[in-house]
Amino acid sequence: HEQKVVQSKENTQKGKPGSDVTPAKLPPKKPFVPLGGNRYSEYRNGAYIPPAWKESELKELARVALARKGRVKMAMEHAWNGYRTFAWGTDELLPLTNVGQDNWGGIGATLVDSLSTLWLLGMKDEFWEARDWVKDNLDFSKVGTISVFETTIRNLGGLLSAYDLSHDAVFLEKADDLGKRLMKAFGTPHGVPFGETELFDDGQSYNTGWHSNTAILSEIGSLQVEFRYLARVTGKSEYATIAMRALDEVLKLQTDSGLFPTFIHNTKQTLSFGNSAISIGAMGDSFYEYLLKIWLQGGKKESKYREMYDKAIDGIMDKLIFMSRPNYLTYVAEMNMGTVIHKMDHLSCFLGGNMALGAYTHPDGLSSMKAQRQLKTGKQLAYTCYQMYARSKSGLAPEYVSFNDGQGNDFAKGRDAPYHLLRPEAAESFFILYHLTKDPVYREWGWELFQAIEEHARTDSGYSAIRDVDTLEKENRMESFFMSETLKYLYLLQDDNDDLDLLNEHVLNTEAHPLRLLELTSTPNDLSINTLARIN
Image 1: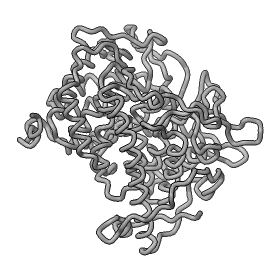
Image 2 (image 1 turned 90 degrees about the vertical axis):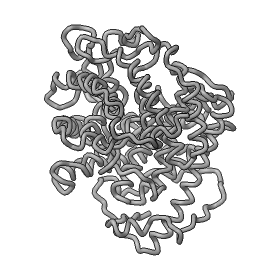
Image 3 (image 1 turned 60 degrees about the vertical axis):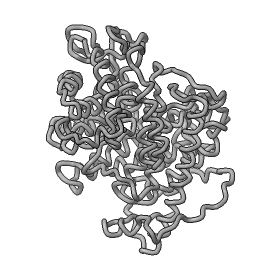
Protein backbone atom coordinates (compact mmCIF):
# COMPACT_ATOMS: atom_id res chain seq x y z
CA HIS A 1 0.00 0.00 0.00
CA GLU A 2 2.89 2.37 -0.56
CA GLN A 3 1.58 5.78 -1.60
CA LYS A 4 3.35 8.45 -3.59
CA VAL A 5 3.21 12.23 -3.38
CA VAL A 6 3.08 14.81 -6.15
CA GLN A 7 5.98 17.04 -5.24
CA SER A 8 5.83 19.94 -7.66
CA LYS A 9 3.28 22.30 -9.14
CA GLU A 10 4.16 21.04 -12.59
CA ASN A 11 3.36 17.47 -11.67
CA THR A 12 0.22 18.56 -9.86
CA GLN A 13 -1.14 20.08 -13.04
CA LYS A 14 -0.48 16.84 -14.92
CA GLY A 15 -2.84 15.09 -12.55
CA LYS A 16 -5.75 17.38 -13.35
CA PRO A 17 -8.67 15.86 -15.23
CA GLY A 18 -8.94 17.41 -18.66
CA SER A 19 -10.15 16.63 -22.15
CA ASP A 20 -7.75 13.68 -22.31
CA VAL A 21 -8.83 12.22 -18.96
CA THR A 22 -12.02 10.22 -18.62
CA PRO A 23 -13.34 8.74 -15.39
CA ALA A 24 -12.11 5.29 -14.54
CA LYS A 25 -14.71 2.54 -14.46
CA LEU A 26 -15.13 1.69 -10.81
CA PRO A 27 -15.97 -1.90 -9.85
CA PRO A 28 -19.68 -2.66 -9.50
CA LYS A 29 -20.94 -1.68 -6.10
CA LYS A 30 -20.53 -4.53 -3.62
CA PRO A 31 -21.02 -4.70 0.15
CA PHE A 32 -18.23 -2.69 1.73
CA VAL A 33 -15.93 -4.77 3.90
CA PRO A 34 -13.44 -2.73 5.96
CA LEU A 35 -9.88 -3.78 5.26
CA GLY A 36 -8.83 -3.31 8.88
CA GLY A 37 -6.37 -1.12 10.69
CA ASN A 38 -2.58 -1.04 10.86
CA ARG A 39 -2.36 -0.45 7.12
CA TYR A 40 -0.37 2.52 5.76
CA SER A 41 1.75 2.20 8.91
CA GLU A 42 4.50 4.25 7.29
CA TYR A 43 2.28 7.29 7.86
CA ARG A 44 2.02 6.70 11.59
CA ASN A 45 4.92 8.94 12.64
CA GLY A 46 4.06 11.82 10.30
CA ALA A 47 7.49 11.93 8.69
CA TYR A 48 7.00 9.71 5.65
CA ILE A 49 7.50 11.47 2.29
CA PRO A 50 6.75 9.03 -0.53
CA PRO A 51 8.35 9.28 -3.97
CA ALA A 52 6.72 11.02 -6.91
CA TRP A 53 4.42 9.29 -9.38
CA LYS A 54 5.16 8.83 -13.05
CA GLU A 55 3.07 10.84 -15.48
CA SER A 56 1.15 7.77 -16.62
CA GLU A 57 0.35 6.90 -13.01
CA LEU A 58 -0.83 10.43 -12.34
CA LYS A 59 -3.27 10.21 -15.21
CA GLU A 60 -4.69 6.95 -13.89
CA LEU A 61 -5.02 8.44 -10.41
CA ALA A 62 -6.91 11.35 -11.93
CA ARG A 63 -9.30 8.97 -13.71
CA VAL A 64 -10.02 7.09 -10.49
CA ALA A 65 -10.56 10.32 -8.55
CA LEU A 66 -12.91 11.62 -11.22
CA ALA A 67 -15.04 8.48 -10.96
CA ARG A 68 -15.07 8.61 -7.17
CA LYS A 69 -16.01 12.27 -7.25
CA GLY A 70 -19.03 11.30 -9.33
CA ARG A 71 -20.07 8.73 -6.73
CA VAL A 72 -19.91 11.31 -3.94
CA LYS A 73 -21.98 13.72 -6.01
CA MET A 74 -24.59 10.99 -6.47
CA ALA A 75 -24.74 10.67 -2.68
CA MET A 76 -25.32 14.42 -2.38
CA GLU A 77 -28.05 14.25 -5.01
CA HIS A 78 -29.71 11.41 -3.11
CA ALA A 79 -29.63 13.26 0.22
CA TRP A 80 -30.76 16.55 -1.32
CA ASN A 81 -33.62 14.94 -3.23
CA GLY A 82 -34.82 13.28 -0.03
CA TYR A 83 -34.74 16.60 1.80
CA ARG A 84 -36.44 18.37 -1.09
CA THR A 85 -39.18 15.73 -1.33
CA PHE A 86 -39.97 15.17 2.34
CA ALA A 87 -38.61 18.11 4.35
CA TRP A 88 -38.38 21.14 2.05
CA GLY A 89 -37.83 24.33 4.03
CA THR A 90 -37.59 22.60 7.40
CA ASP A 91 -34.46 22.44 9.51
CA GLU A 92 -33.76 18.73 9.05
CA LEU A 93 -34.94 15.61 7.30
CA LEU A 94 -35.71 12.62 9.49
CA PRO A 95 -34.36 9.96 7.12
CA LEU A 96 -36.15 6.92 8.54
CA THR A 97 -39.66 8.35 8.81
CA ASN A 98 -39.38 10.71 5.80
CA VAL A 99 -40.62 13.88 7.49
CA GLY A 100 -39.03 17.18 8.36
CA GLN A 101 -38.43 18.72 11.76
CA ASP A 102 -37.75 22.28 12.91
CA ASN A 103 -35.25 21.69 15.68
CA TRP A 104 -33.05 24.74 14.98
CA GLY A 105 -35.77 27.37 15.18
CA GLY A 106 -37.51 26.78 11.86
CA ILE A 107 -34.97 28.65 9.73
CA GLY A 108 -34.40 26.17 6.91
CA ALA A 109 -31.12 25.04 8.47
CA THR A 110 -30.37 22.17 6.08
CA LEU A 111 -31.35 24.17 3.01
CA VAL A 112 -29.20 27.17 3.90
CA ASP A 113 -26.35 25.05 5.21
CA SER A 114 -26.23 23.12 1.91
CA LEU A 115 -26.07 26.12 -0.45
CA SER A 116 -22.29 26.23 -0.82
CA THR A 117 -22.14 22.47 -1.35
CA LEU A 118 -24.73 22.67 -4.13
CA TRP A 119 -22.69 25.38 -5.82
CA LEU A 120 -19.32 23.66 -5.52
CA LEU A 121 -20.71 20.32 -6.73
CA GLY A 122 -22.16 21.98 -9.82
CA MET A 123 -25.78 21.46 -8.76
CA LYS A 124 -26.75 24.92 -9.97
CA ASP A 125 -30.43 24.20 -10.72
CA GLU A 126 -30.87 22.98 -7.15
CA PHE A 127 -28.92 25.99 -5.87
CA TRP A 128 -31.16 28.51 -7.62
CA GLU A 129 -34.31 26.72 -6.54
CA ALA A 130 -33.06 26.91 -2.96
CA ARG A 131 -32.20 30.57 -3.50
CA ASP A 132 -35.80 31.26 -4.45
CA TRP A 133 -36.97 29.61 -1.23
CA VAL A 134 -34.60 31.86 0.71
CA LYS A 135 -35.98 34.94 -1.06
CA ASP A 136 -39.65 34.06 -0.64
CA ASN A 137 -39.79 32.15 2.64
CA LEU A 138 -36.83 32.80 4.93
CA ASP A 139 -38.13 35.23 7.54
CA PHE A 140 -36.28 35.71 10.83
CA SER A 141 -38.75 38.23 12.25
CA LYS A 142 -41.00 35.57 13.77
CA VAL A 143 -38.32 33.13 14.95
CA GLY A 144 -37.97 32.44 18.67
CA THR A 145 -35.05 30.93 20.57
CA ILE A 146 -32.03 29.79 18.60
CA SER A 147 -28.42 28.86 19.34
CA VAL A 148 -26.23 31.87 18.59
CA PHE A 149 -23.26 29.68 17.69
CA GLU A 150 -25.07 27.11 15.54
CA THR A 151 -27.11 29.77 13.74
CA THR A 152 -23.99 31.81 13.03
CA ILE A 153 -21.91 28.99 11.60
CA ARG A 154 -24.72 27.20 9.73
CA ASN A 155 -27.15 29.91 8.63
CA LEU A 156 -25.15 33.13 8.62
CA GLY A 157 -22.11 31.31 7.26
CA GLY A 158 -24.26 29.54 4.67
CA LEU A 159 -25.87 32.75 3.46
CA LEU A 160 -22.57 34.62 3.29
CA SER A 161 -20.82 31.83 1.41
CA ALA A 162 -23.72 31.58 -1.05
CA TYR A 163 -23.35 35.33 -1.60
CA ASP A 164 -19.58 35.07 -2.01
CA LEU A 165 -19.97 32.32 -4.60
CA SER A 166 -22.95 33.64 -6.56
CA HIS A 167 -22.90 37.42 -5.89
CA ASP A 168 -26.67 37.25 -5.51
CA ALA A 169 -27.88 40.08 -3.28
CA VAL A 170 -30.75 38.04 -1.83
CA PHE A 171 -28.27 36.16 0.31
CA LEU A 172 -26.61 39.34 1.53
CA GLU A 173 -29.96 40.91 2.39
CA LYS A 174 -30.97 37.90 4.50
CA ALA A 175 -27.52 37.67 6.11
CA ASP A 176 -27.61 41.32 7.10
CA ASP A 177 -31.03 40.89 8.68
CA LEU A 178 -29.89 37.78 10.57
CA GLY A 179 -26.66 39.42 11.69
CA LYS A 180 -28.57 42.42 13.05
CA ARG A 181 -30.83 40.13 15.08
CA LEU A 182 -27.90 38.13 16.45
CA MET A 183 -26.20 41.27 17.72
CA LYS A 184 -28.45 41.46 20.77
CA ALA A 185 -26.78 38.31 22.12
CA PHE A 186 -23.59 40.30 22.77
CA GLY A 187 -25.28 42.51 25.38
CA THR A 188 -23.30 41.23 28.38
CA PRO A 189 -20.99 43.27 30.66
CA HIS A 190 -17.91 42.32 28.63
CA GLY A 191 -19.54 41.64 25.30
CA VAL A 192 -19.02 37.86 25.58
CA PRO A 193 -22.29 36.65 24.04
CA PHE A 194 -25.11 34.70 25.57
CA GLY A 195 -25.57 31.24 24.11
CA GLU A 196 -29.17 31.74 22.96
CA THR A 197 -31.28 34.59 21.65
CA GLU A 198 -34.79 35.18 20.34
CA LEU A 199 -34.60 36.48 16.80
CA PHE A 200 -37.93 38.27 16.73
CA ASP A 201 -37.98 42.01 17.38
CA ASP A 202 -37.33 42.87 21.04
CA GLY A 203 -36.38 39.26 21.75
CA GLN A 204 -34.34 38.38 24.81
CA SER A 205 -30.93 36.72 25.11
CA TYR A 206 -29.70 34.33 27.77
CA ASN A 207 -27.32 31.46 28.38
CA THR A 208 -28.40 27.90 27.74
CA GLY A 209 -30.17 26.41 30.75
CA TRP A 210 -27.61 23.80 31.69
CA HIS A 211 -24.84 26.41 31.92
CA SER A 212 -26.90 29.48 32.75
CA ASN A 213 -24.04 31.59 34.16
CA THR A 214 -21.37 30.71 31.63
CA ALA A 215 -20.61 30.77 27.92
CA ILE A 216 -18.87 27.95 26.06
CA LEU A 217 -15.35 28.64 24.80
CA SER A 218 -15.83 27.26 21.29
CA GLU A 219 -19.04 29.25 20.87
CA ILE A 220 -17.42 32.54 21.93
CA GLY A 221 -14.49 32.09 19.55
CA SER A 222 -16.30 30.79 16.46
CA LEU A 223 -18.31 33.83 15.39
CA GLN A 224 -15.60 36.18 14.16
CA VAL A 225 -14.92 34.85 10.65
CA GLU A 226 -18.60 35.26 9.76
CA PHE A 227 -19.18 38.68 11.31
CA ARG A 228 -15.95 40.14 9.92
CA TYR A 229 -17.00 39.09 6.43
CA LEU A 230 -20.50 40.49 7.01
CA ALA A 231 -18.98 43.78 8.12
CA ARG A 232 -16.85 43.91 4.98
CA VAL A 233 -19.65 43.29 2.49
CA THR A 234 -22.24 45.52 4.21
CA GLY A 235 -19.91 48.32 5.27
CA LYS A 236 -21.24 48.00 8.83
CA SER A 237 -18.06 47.82 10.89
CA GLU A 238 -19.96 47.21 14.13
CA TYR A 239 -20.45 43.58 13.16
CA ALA A 240 -16.70 42.98 13.25
CA THR A 241 -16.04 45.27 16.22
CA ILE A 242 -18.59 43.56 18.46
CA ALA A 243 -17.63 40.00 17.49
CA MET A 244 -13.91 40.67 17.87
CA ARG A 245 -14.41 42.30 21.27
CA ALA A 246 -15.87 39.04 22.58
CA LEU A 247 -12.76 37.12 21.54
CA ASP A 248 -10.33 39.79 22.69
CA GLU A 249 -11.88 39.93 26.16
CA VAL A 250 -11.36 36.18 26.58
CA LEU A 251 -7.79 36.39 25.30
CA LYS A 252 -7.04 39.05 27.93
CA LEU A 253 -7.49 36.39 30.61
CA GLN A 254 -4.27 34.78 29.36
CA THR A 255 -2.91 31.40 30.41
CA ASP A 256 0.64 30.10 30.58
CA SER A 257 -0.10 27.29 28.15
CA GLY A 258 -2.29 29.22 25.70
CA LEU A 259 -5.12 26.78 26.49
CA PHE A 260 -8.41 27.97 27.95
CA PRO A 261 -11.11 26.26 30.04
CA THR A 262 -14.30 25.34 28.24
CA PHE A 263 -16.57 27.61 30.34
CA ILE A 264 -16.29 31.39 30.77
CA HIS A 265 -18.42 33.35 33.28
CA ASN A 266 -20.07 36.04 31.13
CA THR A 267 -22.83 37.44 33.37
CA LYS A 268 -20.69 39.12 36.03
CA GLN A 269 -18.88 42.44 35.86
CA THR A 270 -15.55 40.61 35.93
CA LEU A 271 -14.90 38.01 33.24
CA SER A 272 -13.52 34.78 34.69
CA PHE A 273 -13.02 31.08 34.00
CA GLY A 274 -16.01 28.89 34.77
CA ASN A 275 -14.22 25.54 35.12
CA SER A 276 -10.84 23.89 34.66
CA ALA A 277 -11.61 21.49 31.81
CA ILE A 278 -9.40 21.73 28.71
CA SER A 279 -10.71 20.20 25.49
CA ILE A 280 -9.68 20.34 21.85
CA GLY A 281 -12.88 18.42 21.09
CA ALA A 282 -16.35 19.28 22.34
CA MET A 283 -16.72 22.84 23.66
CA GLY A 284 -13.16 23.85 22.81
CA ASP A 285 -12.33 22.86 19.22
CA SER A 286 -13.22 25.78 16.95
CA PHE A 287 -11.91 28.42 19.39
CA TYR A 288 -8.41 27.31 18.45
CA GLU A 289 -9.36 26.73 14.81
CA TYR A 290 -10.48 30.35 14.44
CA LEU A 291 -7.32 31.88 15.97
CA LEU A 292 -5.52 30.73 12.83
CA LYS A 293 -8.37 31.50 10.44
CA ILE A 294 -8.90 35.04 11.72
CA TRP A 295 -5.24 35.74 11.06
CA LEU A 296 -5.50 34.26 7.56
CA GLN A 297 -8.78 36.02 6.80
CA GLY A 298 -7.22 39.37 7.66
CA GLY A 299 -4.33 38.90 5.26
CA LYS A 300 -1.86 37.74 7.97
CA LYS A 301 -1.68 41.28 9.37
CA GLU A 302 -3.15 40.80 12.85
CA SER A 303 -0.13 39.07 14.35
CA LYS A 304 -1.51 38.64 17.86
CA TYR A 305 -3.99 35.99 16.68
CA ARG A 306 -1.25 34.01 14.97
CA GLU A 307 0.87 34.31 18.10
CA MET A 308 -2.02 33.12 20.27
CA TYR A 309 -2.60 30.24 17.87
CA ASP A 310 1.04 29.15 17.98
CA LYS A 311 1.07 29.46 21.76
CA ALA A 312 -2.02 27.26 21.98
CA ILE A 313 -0.53 24.70 19.58
CA ASP A 314 2.62 24.59 21.70
CA GLY A 315 0.41 24.06 24.76
CA ILE A 316 -1.44 21.23 23.02
CA MET A 317 1.78 19.51 21.99
CA ASP A 318 3.40 19.92 25.40
CA LYS A 319 0.43 18.95 27.57
CA LEU A 320 -2.14 17.01 25.53
CA ILE A 321 -0.33 15.03 22.82
CA PHE A 322 0.38 11.42 23.75
CA MET A 323 1.20 8.12 22.05
CA SER A 324 -0.77 4.94 22.55
CA ARG A 325 0.50 1.45 23.14
CA PRO A 326 1.25 -0.93 21.55
CA ASN A 327 1.29 0.81 18.15
CA TYR A 328 2.30 4.35 19.08
CA LEU A 329 -0.65 6.23 17.64
CA THR A 330 -0.52 9.96 18.28
CA TYR A 331 -3.63 11.41 19.91
CA VAL A 332 -4.81 14.60 21.60
CA ALA A 333 -6.16 14.05 25.10
CA GLU A 334 -8.27 16.20 27.42
CA MET A 335 -7.54 17.59 30.86
CA ASN A 336 -9.60 18.43 33.93
CA MET A 337 -8.24 19.92 37.15
CA GLY A 338 -4.76 19.09 35.93
CA THR A 339 -5.52 15.41 35.33
CA VAL A 340 -5.12 14.03 31.81
CA ILE A 341 -8.13 12.17 30.37
CA HIS A 342 -6.94 9.80 27.67
CA LYS A 343 -9.84 10.12 25.27
CA MET A 344 -10.10 11.74 21.85
CA ASP A 345 -13.30 13.07 20.34
CA HIS A 346 -14.05 12.69 16.66
CA LEU A 347 -14.52 16.46 16.84
CA SER A 348 -10.78 16.72 17.62
CA CYS A 349 -9.95 15.25 14.23
CA PHE A 350 -10.16 18.75 12.74
CA LEU A 351 -6.80 19.44 14.37
CA GLY A 352 -4.71 17.41 11.92
CA GLY A 353 -5.70 19.52 8.95
CA ASN A 354 -5.70 22.72 10.96
CA MET A 355 -2.12 22.17 12.12
CA ALA A 356 -1.05 21.39 8.57
CA LEU A 357 -2.61 24.65 7.39
CA GLY A 358 -0.85 26.43 10.23
CA ALA A 359 2.46 24.91 9.16
CA TYR A 360 2.08 25.84 5.50
CA THR A 361 1.29 29.45 6.46
CA HIS A 362 3.80 29.76 9.30
CA PRO A 363 5.46 33.21 9.47
CA ASP A 364 8.87 31.51 9.72
CA GLY A 365 8.21 29.44 6.59
CA LEU A 366 7.23 25.84 6.03
CA SER A 367 10.83 24.63 6.39
CA SER A 368 11.23 26.15 9.85
CA MET A 369 11.50 23.85 12.86
CA LYS A 370 8.23 25.08 14.36
CA ALA A 371 6.29 24.62 11.13
CA GLN A 372 7.70 21.15 10.58
CA ARG A 373 6.77 20.16 14.13
CA GLN A 374 3.20 21.33 13.52
CA LEU A 375 3.01 19.54 10.17
CA LYS A 376 4.38 16.28 11.51
CA THR A 377 1.97 16.26 14.45
CA GLY A 378 -0.93 17.15 12.17
CA LYS A 379 -0.14 14.21 9.91
CA GLN A 380 0.18 11.90 12.90
CA LEU A 381 -3.24 12.94 14.20
CA ALA A 382 -4.81 12.46 10.76
CA TYR A 383 -3.45 8.91 10.66
CA THR A 384 -4.95 8.20 14.08
CA CYS A 385 -8.31 9.54 12.92
CA TYR A 386 -8.10 7.25 9.92
CA GLN A 387 -7.44 4.35 12.29
CA MET A 388 -10.58 5.28 14.25
CA TYR A 389 -12.47 4.32 11.10
CA ALA A 390 -10.27 1.54 9.74
CA ARG A 391 -10.17 -0.47 12.98
CA SER A 392 -13.92 -0.36 13.48
CA LYS A 393 -15.85 -3.49 12.50
CA SER A 394 -18.10 -1.37 10.29
CA GLY A 395 -15.51 1.10 9.02
CA LEU A 396 -17.31 3.91 10.89
CA ALA A 397 -15.69 5.82 13.75
CA PRO A 398 -17.50 6.30 17.08
CA GLU A 399 -18.07 9.69 18.72
CA TYR A 400 -14.89 9.26 20.73
CA VAL A 401 -12.30 6.65 21.61
CA SER A 402 -10.54 5.90 24.89
CA PHE A 403 -6.84 5.09 24.77
CA ASN A 404 -4.81 2.44 26.57
CA ASP A 405 -7.86 0.43 27.56
CA GLY A 406 -5.92 -2.20 29.47
CA GLN A 407 -6.85 -4.92 26.96
CA GLY A 408 -3.77 -4.54 24.82
CA ASN A 409 -5.50 -2.28 22.29
CA ASP A 410 -4.45 1.21 21.29
CA PHE A 411 -8.00 2.43 21.81
CA ALA A 412 -11.59 1.34 22.29
CA LYS A 413 -14.86 3.01 21.33
CA GLY A 414 -16.36 5.29 23.96
CA ARG A 415 -18.61 3.26 26.22
CA ASP A 416 -21.24 5.97 26.56
CA ALA A 417 -20.95 7.27 23.01
CA PRO A 418 -20.63 4.39 20.52
CA TYR A 419 -22.64 6.29 17.92
CA HIS A 420 -21.65 7.82 14.59
CA LEU A 421 -23.30 11.11 13.61
CA LEU A 422 -21.90 11.45 10.06
CA ARG A 423 -19.43 14.00 11.38
CA PRO A 424 -17.01 15.75 9.00
CA GLU A 425 -13.79 16.31 10.95
CA ALA A 426 -11.76 13.36 9.65
CA ALA A 427 -12.78 14.09 6.06
CA GLU A 428 -11.92 17.74 6.70
CA SER A 429 -8.35 16.91 7.70
CA PHE A 430 -7.93 14.49 4.79
CA PHE A 431 -9.11 17.20 2.37
CA ILE A 432 -6.83 19.89 3.78
CA LEU A 433 -3.82 17.59 3.82
CA TYR A 434 -4.43 16.50 0.25
CA HIS A 435 -5.04 20.12 -0.81
CA LEU A 436 -1.65 21.08 0.65
CA THR A 437 0.52 18.02 -0.01
CA LYS A 438 -1.14 16.33 -3.02
CA ASP A 439 -0.41 12.98 -1.39
CA PRO A 440 -3.05 10.55 -2.81
CA VAL A 441 -3.10 8.52 0.40
CA TYR A 442 -5.60 10.97 1.86
CA ARG A 443 -7.91 10.25 -1.06
CA GLU A 444 -7.72 6.55 -0.27
CA TRP A 445 -8.59 7.13 3.38
CA GLY A 446 -11.48 9.40 2.45
CA TRP A 447 -12.78 6.88 -0.06
CA GLU A 448 -12.87 4.18 2.61
CA LEU A 449 -14.76 6.56 4.89
CA PHE A 450 -17.28 7.34 2.16
CA GLN A 451 -17.84 3.67 1.33
CA ALA A 452 -18.59 2.89 4.98
CA ILE A 453 -21.16 5.69 5.11
CA GLU A 454 -22.71 4.56 1.85
CA GLU A 455 -22.88 0.97 3.08
CA HIS A 456 -24.30 1.50 6.55
CA ALA A 457 -25.98 4.92 6.72
CA ARG A 458 -27.89 5.20 3.43
CA THR A 459 -31.69 5.17 3.63
CA ASP A 460 -34.43 5.52 1.04
CA SER A 461 -34.46 9.30 1.48
CA GLY A 462 -31.00 10.22 2.74
CA TYR A 463 -28.41 9.08 5.27
CA SER A 464 -28.88 8.38 8.95
CA ALA A 465 -26.78 8.55 12.06
CA ILE A 466 -25.79 5.17 13.53
CA ARG A 467 -26.56 4.34 17.17
CA ASP A 468 -23.60 1.98 17.57
CA VAL A 469 -20.78 1.45 15.10
CA ASP A 470 -20.78 -2.28 15.90
CA THR A 471 -24.50 -3.12 15.96
CA LEU A 472 -25.28 -0.58 13.17
CA GLU A 473 -28.82 0.27 14.28
CA LYS A 474 -29.87 3.43 12.48
CA GLU A 475 -30.85 6.67 14.25
CA ASN A 476 -33.61 8.85 12.75
CA ARG A 477 -31.38 11.90 12.29
CA MET A 478 -29.45 13.56 9.48
CA GLU A 479 -27.71 16.68 10.73
CA SER A 480 -27.35 19.57 8.30
CA PHE A 481 -23.56 19.32 8.55
CA PHE A 482 -23.64 16.04 6.62
CA MET A 483 -24.42 17.86 3.37
CA SER A 484 -22.72 21.09 4.35
CA GLU A 485 -19.43 19.54 5.44
CA THR A 486 -18.99 15.78 5.20
CA LEU A 487 -20.09 15.31 1.59
CA LYS A 488 -18.46 18.56 0.53
CA TYR A 489 -15.09 17.54 1.94
CA LEU A 490 -15.35 14.04 0.49
CA TYR A 491 -16.17 15.50 -2.94
CA LEU A 492 -13.44 18.15 -2.91
CA LEU A 493 -10.95 15.53 -1.74
CA GLN A 494 -11.39 13.77 -5.09
CA ASP A 495 -11.64 16.98 -7.13
CA ASP A 496 -8.57 18.37 -8.89
CA ASN A 497 -10.57 21.19 -10.44
CA ASP A 498 -11.90 22.77 -7.26
CA ASP A 499 -11.64 26.54 -7.13
CA LEU A 500 -10.69 26.82 -3.47
CA ASP A 501 -7.25 28.09 -2.50
CA LEU A 502 -6.71 27.79 1.25
CA LEU A 503 -3.27 29.38 1.08
CA ASN A 504 -4.04 32.54 -0.88
CA GLU A 505 -7.73 33.22 -1.40
CA HIS A 506 -10.18 31.47 0.92
CA VAL A 507 -10.92 30.64 4.50
CA LEU A 508 -13.43 27.96 5.44
CA ASN A 509 -15.64 28.66 8.41
CA THR A 510 -16.10 25.83 10.89
CA GLU A 511 -19.14 24.62 8.91
CA ALA A 512 -17.04 24.31 5.69
CA HIS A 513 -18.49 27.45 4.10
CA PRO A 514 -15.80 29.10 1.92
CA LEU A 515 -15.35 32.88 2.17
CA ARG A 516 -12.81 34.98 0.34
CA LEU A 517 -10.15 36.74 2.37
CA LEU A 518 -11.23 40.21 3.42
CA GLU A 519 -8.78 42.00 1.14
CA LEU A 520 -10.20 40.05 -1.83
CA THR A 521 -13.82 40.77 -0.89
CA SER A 522 -15.79 43.61 -2.44
CA THR A 523 -17.11 46.38 -0.21
CA PRO A 524 -20.52 47.97 -0.87
CA ASN A 525 -18.85 50.66 -2.97
CA ASP A 526 -17.33 48.00 -5.22
CA LEU A 527 -20.56 46.16 -5.99
CA SER A 528 -21.58 46.09 -9.61
CA ILE A 529 -25.00 45.82 -11.20
CA ASN A 530 -24.29 42.10 -11.61
CA THR A 531 -24.64 41.64 -7.86
CA LEU A 532 -28.29 42.62 -8.11
CA ALA A 533 -29.00 40.74 -11.30
CA ARG A 534 -30.99 37.91 -9.73
CA ILE A 535 -32.63 39.76 -6.87
CA ASN A 536 -35.93 39.66 -8.72
